[in-house]
Image (tube, rainbow, N blue to C red; front, side, top):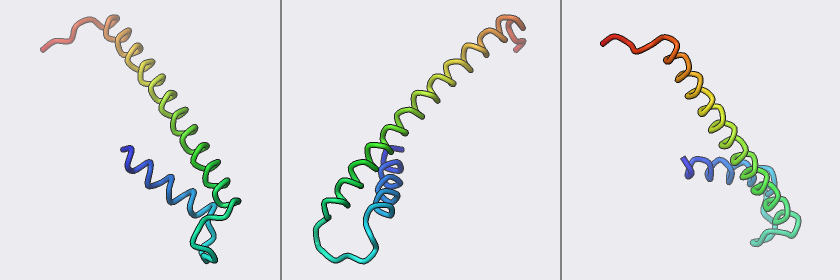
Amino acid sequence: MMADMYNRMTRSCHRKCVPPNYKDPDLSKGESVCLDRCVAKYLDVHERLGRKLTELSVQDEELLGRVQQRVGPSAP
């Protein structure tokens, strides 16, 4: 899963920050800054989504537990 996120981030930030026609072998200052910001935002959003999904999963488990308590044990 982390490899997929890394690959998506790399493609997305490269597409956004580096023009398709290379003039120099090294990144320019602007390209470097753009890539740095893009990666930081991508990782921040990834972290926020992970926390939100964990929160929703915990809420679902709690709700399921309450429903099962009300219904009682299920028959085999």
